[in-house]
Image 1 (cartoon, rainbow, N blue to C red):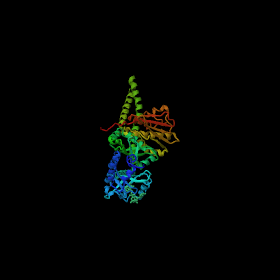
Image 2 (image 1 turned 90 degrees about the horizontal axis):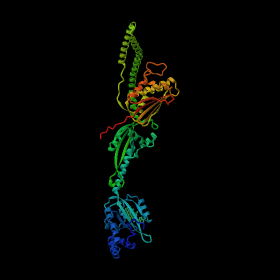
Image 3 (image 1 turned 180 degrees about the vertical axis):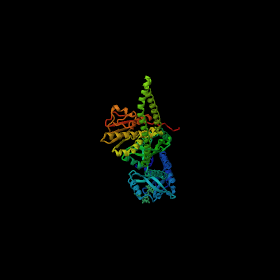
Image 4 (image 1 turned 180 degrees about the horizontal axis):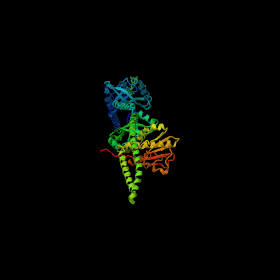
Length: 547
Ligand code: FAD
């Protein structure tokens, strides 16, 4: 039998008895009792009695109707849901419950289904006896006689108003959150513990095409983990968020270098799986917001560049004075050393006829030493600057920006190949700027001198085993292998006409590299010009978090 009514077919109730039971003219309960008695006499009482008990006690509103939906029987739960007692509703049509807000098509579908001996399942808006509307989740099953004719219908329904209300509330909240997130001008993405994206917004989706990355968030996570070190773990374990951590993305996608302010918040959600009911399992998520601050950063950078240009010009002037004075001292000290040597020889020989010359030489030597001491006092000190974590990509970008006028004037372009993720190095920004400015100036000068056709300086940054490397390639004449060490010596120059200022640039460069515990060398394998390879140890972040 095609019915959802509890196992009628297998009960000890036959269809004739049931028909008698459901006769519309008699009270169903009276009939039930009669039947139970008659079945009891036949030794069949227990299964049917149990069935009746089940129907009576089940917390689902059950009604049995005739073929036209006239109600013949209701259970207790029906009264509880609708407010109608048996005597008030028996004999009435189920449409007594109908609220006119249910579309007619629903009733049509209902009758169309059940009259074809199928079970109908759906929702109707009903009214209780007091006129209160409620949402009924309903199943209607036809009952058939032995010849397969529909004799009755069994309706079962639950008031799901509260569940529907709660569901709708959740849906509305979800929609509200989604529309707020989608309307946000900031890219937002929610990640589970395995870094899988569980929710994102339109701006985040745009990032995918903008940056040309399949899942940009993985890239941001790598940068953040690297940037925050131990702090990341601490923040995620304690659900402490982080706010506005600035990340720089090198040459990604169509719009070049970009800056993002990233904020993150960890939150916990109760697991909705059945097995979490007793265990109270939870799930952790991270809400990451990525705000594109490239425009602000570019404006800031422009202002910063103006200041840096002035600073660097001042420092260059100082270095140039220093270099001139040291050069002069170097030139003076050479003959002075020879005079000292001559005085020594004369003193050893002790020939009296040489005494006047010796005295004169001693006088010259003294004056020379005094001059050297005076010059030494005039050599200006380069002011020390703070040592801080420095992003060499950012710094090199600034240096090339500062040199842009000179590069343009010389028709040289920079081929900028930054490592997308570059850990910081510890250093003095000013000194490092001077270092790279010097190397770029040298490259420009070498290419001009050589008359290079390819006017290109390639700058590459890379990370290798806890070292950050910068490769600076030019297309000039290169430095012959026998001079590659000497060029770092004071006053050594490859210029045919050595000027007094020449020959100190690479000494300064090496000095700065040494002060940063780094290395500088000329790559012997590179034969298209000159390649300087400068390396600095990665700044190992120590946890500053108090636990
Ligand atoms: P209409 O759909 O216009 O029909 C009027 C009456 O004509 C019906 O009630 C029915 O007696 C009869 N009828 C209509 N179509 C057929 C058909 N194809 N075959 C035989 N008779 C037909 N409705 C609710 O709103 N709430 C309920 O909780 C509910 N429970 C039901 C439980 C059962 C077991 C059954 C069989 C029906 C139930 N209905 C229920 C449907 C209800 O009978 C009405 O069809 C519905 O309420 C629409 O009311 P109406 O006055 O517009 O009736």
